[in-house]
Length: 79
Image (cartoon, rainbow, N blue to C red; front, side, top):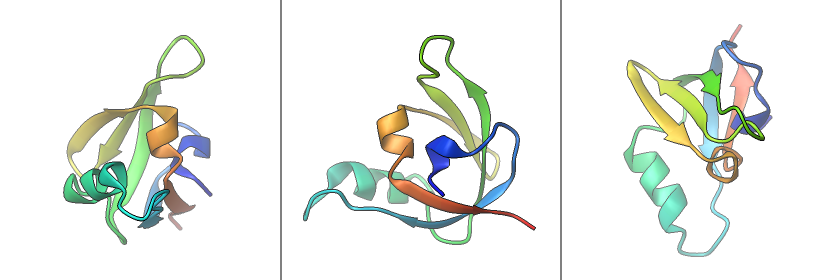
């Protein structure tokens, strides 16, 4: 499942960040910000128009991501 498809307030675990290009600066930046395998993540809020941006929480830190950026993050629900 992709992060952008995760229901709000559903805890999930990051599997990996997908590189769209051979050298992908957005995927690299997401990893630098803490979007790495094994981290817990959830969607805290969605924007009012077309649900963009998404407010994402990784650990104790919150980020605003566009849906296109969140689509690069693959997750599975935490059990």
